[in-house]
Image (cartoon, rainbow, N blue to C red; front, top):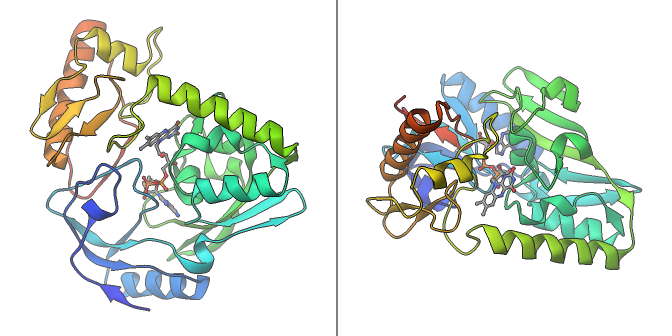
Length: 291
Ligand SMILES: Cc1cc2nc3c(=O)[nH]c(=O)nc-3n(C[C@H](O)[C@H](O)[C@H](O)COP(=O)(O)OP(=O)(O)OC[C@H]3O[C@@H](n4cnc5c(N)ncnc54)[C@H](O)[C@@H]3O)c2cc1C
């Protein structure tokens, strides 16, 4: 199992920012994953897992942790009857492809979520009225404390939330899908992608939704738009002119640039709407978001 040093997190996140990881590994089997977890535990080093980095903001100064990206068997997908079994590092695109090839529906909602199975569990990712909690049978979670299968209830899945802490790695998942004609799956996916393209920046470097939708008649995007923040920039980062709950890397952005925009957005939402926006994007490394 090869351990690397100074791997830049900017290469592992969709926004393209972030400094070096203290150590980095791509475990490709359960045995390799167990070995890396033990290696980190022996050194008192914390562990962070990166999927596609599609909801991740990593510190510019880097992360004093062992960063893992699951590969090989831990990123593979197979269909068994109406169950789709995937490694934690399997991309949603590959899962959807395999489900469609097997004539299984239920995963279409994830067609525009550019993450992995493990990231989907951790975030309880969702769209168009569905989320991971509705398809997940169970997830195999490894940590320095052991190896357990957890149900959505055990994982505490709720709106863009799970109870999984850092150091707990989703190594495998099982999704419960249902037979559906391939043409219907294709038609649903095409319709959802069209909807997505009409409302969100799909060809820019972003990390998806910045904030969770608050308990308010306005979603986070509409609220920040009403605050006049569309197109507001800091350094190389800009609040998307298309959807105000997205931050784009317009060229040379840093994590500090994105954080400055997030702080400004929170300040304005609090002042104009009395709402404390909670960030959806996950922060990796020594990052403080001012109140
Ligand atoms: C253009 C765009 C559109 C998006 N649309 C949506 C959407 O519609 N709905 C939605 O919910 N999200 C959306 N997102 C956000 C993102 O794609 C999801 O949150 C996704 O599930 C994150 O998966 P990931 O593998 O990239 O995780 P990462 O971003 O790499 O990590 C996110 C969190 O999950 C943890 N994690 C990752 N893998 C594992 C693992 N194997 N075990 C344990 N923890 C792990 C990380 O440590 C981190 O805390 C969008 C993002 C982009 C860029």
